[in-house]
Each structure stands twice: as structure tokens, then as C-alpha cells.
Amino acid sequence: MKNILITGAAGFIGYNLTKNLIENKEIKVFGIDSLNSAYDNNLKKLRLKNLENNENFTFSKIDLSNQDSFDDIQGSNFDCVIHLAARAGVRQSFREPKKYILDNTVSTTNLSGFVKKEEIQKFLIASTSSIYGDSGETPMKEDIDEKYPPPSVYASSKLSGELMAKTILDDTETCIQIPRFFTVYGPYGRPDMSILRFIHWIYTGTEILLYGDGNQKRSFTYIDDVISGLNTLILSKDSGVFNIGSDKTVSLNQVISIIEKELNIESKIDYQPRAFKDVDVVIPDLNRMKSLNWNPTTSIEKGISKTIQWYLKYAEVLKNIRFKFEYEK
Image 1 (spheres, rainbow, N blue to C red):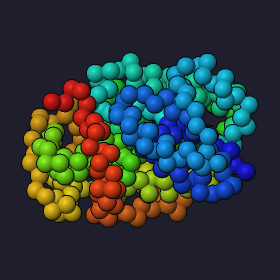
Image 2: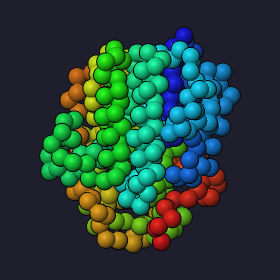
Image 3: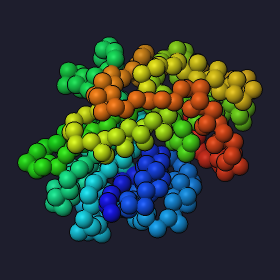
């Protein structure tokens, strides 16, 4: 039986990957999460509730930024560690830089030391396309970070975590894989991400909070494609950085139109000044992942439709979820 440690198991990607892996009776997942207040914990509890009765899943609340927390999982003989725990959000990172350094850089540093001590053979470290910033290079290749400085505290904290892991494990045989995700969305998604926020605001008749004119184009990537990409990496022996995203960009205005059509509700939009260091177009170079025979397959229309179906199913629960940061009026 394969024994896998997943950090951030109560998070969006962590939950979906755990759910996918434990469908295979030959895989056992030990999930950990700090259950911090980066966004509404009620959504994390909803995810965990769906996992709690599976005999191949064990959960423990652990704060990776606390070195002593690793005492509880030492000697567990993990075959693979998949590090999905993080504090995300570009705008918020400028307001709380210390929290981002602690949760993204210090935690990854501590976990890298654990991987080294336990002689774990594979280490996946989830990262972000935010690292690439507004380089002007499209599509965005995995080596852009070597040419331009990261544009935000969030991006810096994630890149620092990547570098610390590489440095700490440099003299080991551990296979390090770093998937960089591009705007992931779908059922059980983070409530601070645009598509789920837009669905909630349009459905409830709330004015949409939109930074900029809405013409910014993004690589919106459906969660099932991300899970497929992670499974591809788990099976691969290749190390390095890998972009996981959609190679078809869509503007925020287009996303809003698709949601309006699906719900048959017209939105109201509150246009706010463009966010600091916002990027016009984000599109990944997927050649590395395609060389492993992976391709995203979910269209934006199909992905949004599935997300709306999930939202409507849980609308009564989600009405009490916080879809804004405290600083957003």
C-alpha cells in the first residue's frame, strides 16, 4: 500500500486530490491542515466532513510553521509528501507579509527538513503562477522566475519556499516536483477566488466587486484538470518545475457573461481601481506537462456549469460563507 502525506488536506486542491487518491484502495492518505483563518473555515469543515468516514484517510490538525509539530508524524514511512498547504492571495499578502512568510516559506522549510530526515523519495511542492508577474513574456515558461523578481509578497514567499526546499534537499536523492498552478476553480473552491465569488454575488443579487475594467485575461483551470496533472506527476520520475493550467485564456468580463447566461440572471458590477501590479494576460507554456502526456480537457463553459451546479446544491450552507476579505467594503 502506498502511504502519502498531504498537507493542506482541508484546502481546495488538497481536499480534491485526497478524495481522488483514496478511491484507490491501495493508497492511504494522512492529511494535515492548520485550519487557519486565511478564509472561512466553514468551507474547510465541509470538505473534511466528506472525507472523515473513509478508512484510508487519517487527519490531524498540524501547524507546519511550528517545528515541534513534526513529532506527531515522525517515523510514518511516507512514500511521498504532497505539500499543498499555503496562505494564498496577492492583495492580502501586502497587508499581512509576516503571515505569508510564516505559512509559505517557514512551513516549507520545516517540511523540507522533515522530508530529508525521513529520507522520503518524492516531494511535490505546490506553487503559483503569481511568481511570473508581469514579465511581458507569453506564454509563461517555467524559467521566467530566473529573469524577473516576484511581484508580490505572496509570490516571493512561495518562490522562497521552492528555493529553500531545493537547497535543503540538494544532497539527497529525493525527487522534487514543483507544479505551478494557474487560477484554479471548481466545486469546493476558495471563496476569495473570482469565479466562485462571481457565482455567489450574481445568484444572491449582490454587486460584483471587480478590480479593473474586466478585460484582464486569465488561464482559468478546472479542478479536475489540476488533479489529473498532479496524478501525472505522482506517477512520473521527472523532477523540476511544471506549469499546470489552461492554454486558453478568458477575460473576467467573459466569465461574468457565462455565469449570467447559466443562471439567467443579469449582474451588477462595481468597478474598482485596478489592483497593484495586476497583469493583463496570464497564459502558461504547457510543453513540460504535455511531454508527460497531460493536457487540460475542461472548457471554461463546462467548468463553470459544473461549479454552478455544485453551488446551487450547497447554496443554503454557502450563504453563511464569507466571500470577501475584511478590507473589502
